[in-house]
Amino acid sequence: MSTHHAPALRRLSVGIFAAIAIQALALGQAQAITVDLQVKSTSSATYTTDVVIKNDTSTAINGWTLTFKLGNTIKSFYSATKSGSDPYTWKNVSFNGAIAVGKTQSFGFTANGTLNGANMGGCTINGLACTLLIGGSPIGGASSSAASSKAASSVAASSKASSAAASSKASSAAASSKASSAAASSTPASSSSSSTAGVVRYRQTFDTLATGALWKNNLDSAKPKAHPENALVTASCGTGGSTCLRIVYRQSDGIHKQPPSSPVFVTASGVINWTPSDAGHSNTATDVLQANLPIDGKTDGSSKDSNAAVPAKAYTLSYDVYFEPGFDFAKGGKLPGLAAAAFDSGCTEDGNAKRSGTNWSERIMWRANGRVELYSYDQTRPSGSCGINKMIDQVAGDPPYEVPGQIPNDSKFRFKPGIWYTIRLSVKMNDNNANVYQRDGSGALVRDANGDPIPLSGNGEVSLAIKSADGATKRLMVYTNVALRDECNGPCSGTPPDTKATWVNALFFSTFHGGNETKRLTCIDLSKSTMTNVVQKAMPSYSGLTQARFDQLCASQINVPIFPILTWNPLRLTAARYDNMVVTEGYTAQAF
Image (cartoon, rainbow, N blue to C red; front, side, top):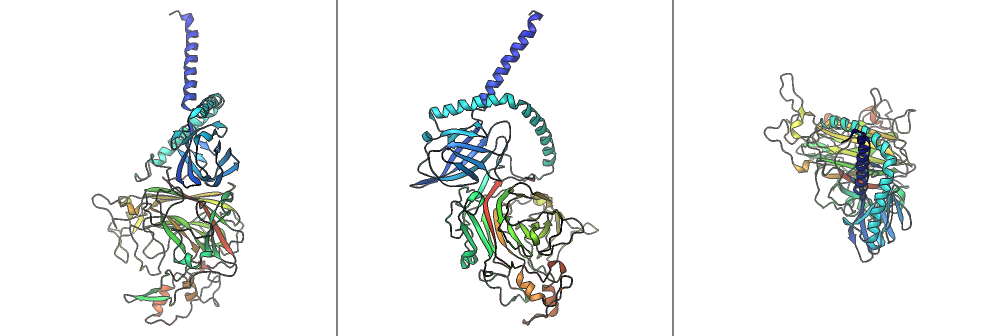
């Protein structure tokens, strides 16, 4: 070959390869973003469908606006906001805006009539064409082909414009991948596989439920049934005007709840203890609204507390919460979290409630003035003790709790009434043979009063991320080296157990003000106590009760940080709203 023809041939070759590459890119991305309508239920007049957006492009999507013609009238919807009138425009909500490469996000709606692909078309997402599917199959016909052709030309046209940005993102992604790999090497092997990470295993948006009624089959136990006005599915109170679950902790005319235990003490096996709450009694400040809801794989709002769970070693819960204007945080209260098949909660002063190596729970607490903490019932909690508190923005030297109504002039995170917040709680299980136990100077295991080894740490992890609706306020807390389970009750010998009931099984829906108000009122002389001096009440009359035992039972109440004058009880109309409860498989410690 003559050398003077080489440059021209090289240019020709480059041009051919470039043309092939552009054509391949266009063809490969013609269906790179698919929108699949997966019908979940039908009736004579309506149907309910999930809309699954899959991103098979080479670039992550951070926030999406989707438009397409449906051919039906929307009746209700969930996990998105809607505008327009066929074609409809849908926008992501707080928890489903990010779609990684190869991953999916979804929302859903109920519409009148029957889904018919012949009436659909005009699919665009963030200005680029997308391909509509029904149950995984293209809607068919010329409109489907036209959509694919339009997608190809749109992507090809945008490829040149975005190549420089893509190159920059690629180098950034490479650095991020390297950092992620380093972080992943320190995580336990028990986390979810990449093939199932991100899969939605539970969704409750309340739009599919009857309004003006209890959350049927999930939160309709004895206490809500006794006071149904406290916990009702309510129309137009959620994010974007959707239906939500509204919980009233204190009504305008006072607290509506079951009465406290009477007597407050009970004798069992010769030992005097506090009488526990039951279906007919509430010792907390407001009624405990609580259920361990199985993560059952249902995404259409049809979950029931009788369904079987789909356990996993890593799950991420997200939900939206709104404290209505005037919300009284009082001394504190609980918010929903995640748990094993059997949750662990509650505490006793003398440790008589033996710790279980298979039960655990991770919840959130609001504290005075809206401060926030992770509230962990893991295996490093001594038998009988209350949960381990991990306060957001807490630093050495801070008082353990604030005085309600006295808000310091600082930048610490506090929930504020009148603002929607997204909460994301992620749990990754520990391996039973990775737990570390307390030992004495000779290396022997130290045992507690029950004769059990004392776990110090494990290789589990819990993260808590919070974001205000406007994105202006964000926080992330990561609790590492967590021993959520301890099935061996000490160092494992042989093959360690790995019982699925100890994995993440349930959305632990738990909310109330408290703290135990019955203990506080029994133990503390409110007329004599001050913020700096807690005075114990005289011992009440109860058969067999001694001063020593009464002192022991009141030990958790006789401390200044509890602030005895100020109650767990909210003092004014106090309500909160819950919406968009979603559980996805996998663990994340990423900030919003």
